[in-house]
Length: 414
Picture 1 (cartoon, rainbow, N blue to C red):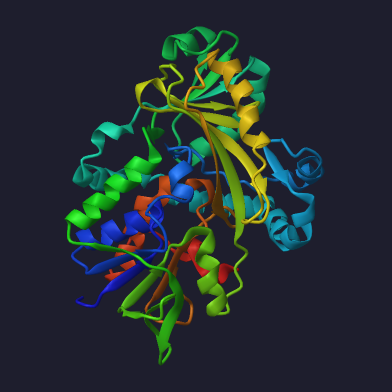
Picture 2 (cartoon, rainbow, N blue to C red; picture 1 turned 135 degrees about the vertical axis):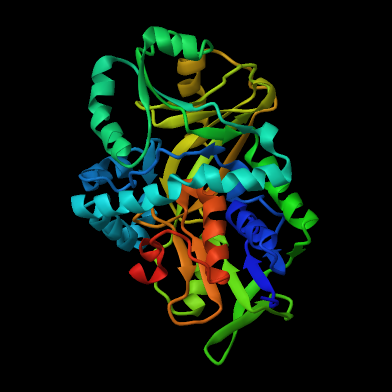
């Protein structure tokens, strides 16, 4: 295939997709209106969260909505003023929580997550990022045996879908991660979980590999799709230029809806706003990625003893002002896990994770326009599933079998 492929969006999903395509020999142009990997990919939690096979819309989740509305600092919060706009998304979220639907969504997520590390391995090797990819596993912490017992049904469901895990008692927890404070009586360890030292530098490393392989990045805003005879044949930039292509892949995160609206596709894409606190000089030497079950947040070990605290979710308009209290409360939560740490050079961040109500991303062709593909809606799994998304799209463009049932990821399911 000699025609050019344009990938719109240079976040981690777009970068990994562009690299997969280029390594397959395709002529690839990667476009973004801003600097690559500076939006949501800049501040994510840095995890390859391979055990997150259960969708966010679990059975009974609808009953939690009053709490989300009443507690603006809770693990998941909904801003009151945004509720009328968000109502259709929440309705679909509730429908996705039906047991039969959760079962099918879990199968769809597991099919992607079970191959995530294998899809990343050749990209990481090509980019020379092996030293940044920490394959040390993750610990989910529980205060006592009763708290763990409540979580075991979910862990057993995960095991049914290929997630291997083991429980640790208090002595094993301390032996596994000596930097943790006393008081964590139990943990679940997932050895296949991994993380990267710095999600931004990791993304830029993959971009450098793409360019070194002959790919082209251009900082330009794709304002619209160009169509002729029922086929997408390029993109129209904000400066009026038309860039021709045989195939266009939209991987623009939360801003992908600009292009779905142009095509009159009704897709319930909303912002799952995430916050983080970056502590580059924390002085805490952690080996594992840490999740706290009771507090619903995570700790990413950065290089040289740094930490990134993340995990809160806020459903609000993508342009709404940040509520920095949601980031600041993570500091006290983290002290309860690792003790005191330095806040020198601390920074706060907020980003818009592109979220679909069923947690499953859109990966695949447009239903009625040849030459157009979509890759968005990864929510908190953007980094985790970027290489897999790119591999699937590469196979679609080249008309090769993927070995995966792609039906669950189609845009037309909405």
